[in-house]
Length: 396
Ligand code: NAD
Ligand code: MG
Image (cartoon, rainbow, N blue to C red; front, side, top):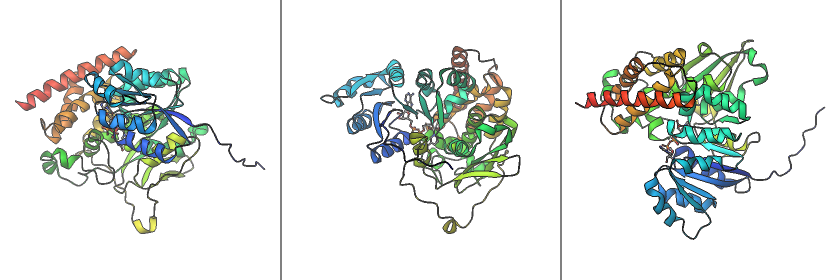
């Protein structure tokens, strides 16, 4: 009989957070503050929110704090004056933050902007808590190749992928029949196309279950988020695209499921609080306590499931087709979507225009193979230029 030994008190984990001022970044910091003996902070990065970044760096005694916007360097330097935190700015400093020695890098930048620093962390063989799904969408094959070559570890933070990670039998992946991703359906789950046509950014970011950054909230409303997650799941788990299903589950309690050849279906459940999957990645392979509200199934009463409606949510079909097309398809999809979501949030285009811009861009930009990282950048640039031209045409 195996005896379970109590664990010796491990040394604190050294952590870097890319995107510390965002929704996932702030939840990560909340957990670190609740477990002060378990973690020390190496570096924190933000786009331009110097005040919050400096406050976090001082509170957690970070060694390095980076603002991506080079114009904010002096402001950061003066906010950190008299502290032990070194200030940095710009794209090179972002990469330096990822390259500094740490046990774990939380990749929580939004969009393809997070690819370069996340790859830098992969290249030094770090463990990565991966929230920044767009990295895998736009450069999945290249990233996974690097992960394998460098012995890095990807710990999924996205709640669905974290759920799958927890119930997937990696040693017997042949016995897995399907992955089933759950989707809340977002704020427009039962809205007509006419209602969606008039949707404002405020309505689109008002997610029924999760409190998240603006971009992912809009992605949830179009359901492009689930399309991106389909591509993310394809890269994270050894299961082909045609065995990854999507089911609507408006309560966001069953975070995703894996079905096996014997008919068993394993799910991970919990209340919708990102601190649960974030804590899993932070503490892996241990677990730490979180203040997430506990699941009370009897009080919930009903958990419901339904099939997604491909007519009202064309983003799902676009993402699946992009994944099937391979090569630069997902890169083009992601870049066009980032452009269209930004234009929608700036009230330049309507809600339904988002998927139209993505569809048109996928039709116009040639899908080339992605042999090198430069091919990813080229496809990304071309897709952004094409999507930008369409957004301008809608504006006129
Ligand atoms: P957010 O917008 O709240 O935060 C994004 C962070 O990235 C901020 O710190 C911001 O300063 C930084 N950033 C933005 N643009 C940047 C740039 N160009 N260069 C450098 N830094 C930049 O986003 P979020 O909701 O925290 O999401 C972060 C990532 O996690 C996204 O990829 C999202 O899809 C994924 N995710 C988020 C949630 C959630 O609950 N928020 C859940 C699952 C997955
Ligand atoms: Mg998710």
